[in-house]
Image 1 (tube, rainbow, N blue to C red):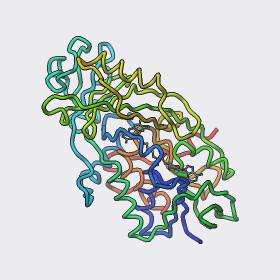
Image 2 (image 1 turned 90 degrees about the vertical axis):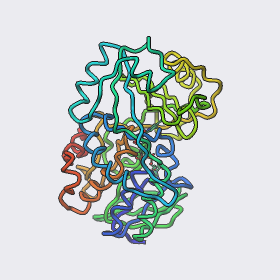
Image 3 (image 1 turned 120 degrees about the horizontal axis):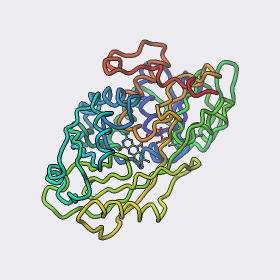
Length: 368
Ligand SMILES: Cc1cc2nc3c(=O)[nH]c(=O)nc-3n(C[C@H](O)[C@H](O)[C@H](O)COP(=O)(O)OP(=O)(O)OC[C@H]3O[C@@H](n4cnc5c(N)ncnc54)[C@H](O)[C@@H]3O)c2cc1C
């Protein structure tokens, strides 16, 4: 098969890009696993947190809000508002407010006010909190499915269970050979998540030093109190933990960030224990049992900004990687930006209106 663009990686990044590009170009997407979105995308905590990720991520998150809140799926809405409480001790509390406040409205709360919102939180373990009112929950499966259907309806070829294709540079383009057969493409997009550096190397393109960091999530029974499912996300200002109601359960993470090789990550007992300990230190509530746990790899560039753009050493190789802990909440804007760069168009006005500047994400900044 001959296409304009071959996207390698069927997580949220690759599938969203296929949805955006297929109306304009002939697109094929290649996913090694039997299902789309089964690696990092399936492991997320499903939050929309405008304060997360700092000044390079904020514009992409803000520019994604309109798509997420408007997008309707046959099975329901994709975005549900939920407040976030950023809790901590002095002196860490004050700089959090200062650094986030410019872009994100935050309200300073006393410990008592914070406890009124999350009634099992211990008042004596915090000096205060910042309330972020514009956070929310994302239905990740519904969002992925929406992008998948957009891509299919526009005529994309979405191939799963392909194994790892052999990649060869052919003249100005690329040849991918694997279980799916042979694919020839003018442009190769690297949307391989934790495997992005490995994929680049397999294609003869310089790796950019992306690091996968493992993060663990524990699901415990819900807190048997009225209104629990509407309680806010509680997140440490220094990102040493967060916990939240999640699909009828209590989700806790110790916010671990252990460097890992790219793999299908699994939780370690010590991180599960740490999650419970941190939660029980913060709350008057015992975790009766662990219902489920999982881990995933958040992949970061060394400056923690996403990597979106052409490879400096291979003009038809496009990077769509380094989406850290924000790849779901930014997927509408990230895919729109990537599509505009591939199509050689100006950055869309919906993105520039929120301060999105493609130069911040150019892979060339990481080449050495
Ligand atoms: C615990 C945890 C909590 C998180 N919470 C949030 C959150 O609340 N909000 C948020 O926005 N983000 C969150 N994230 C981050 C988010 O999940 C990621 O940023 C996002 O899923 C990255 O998507 P991706 O498509 O780049 O990667 P992936 O989903 O990993 O997709 C990459 C795909 O490429 C495939 N692949 C790799 N190599 C090849 C190859 N050679 N051939 C074919 N296929 C290949 C893989 O099989 C994989 O399916 C969280 C992540 C974790 C781990």
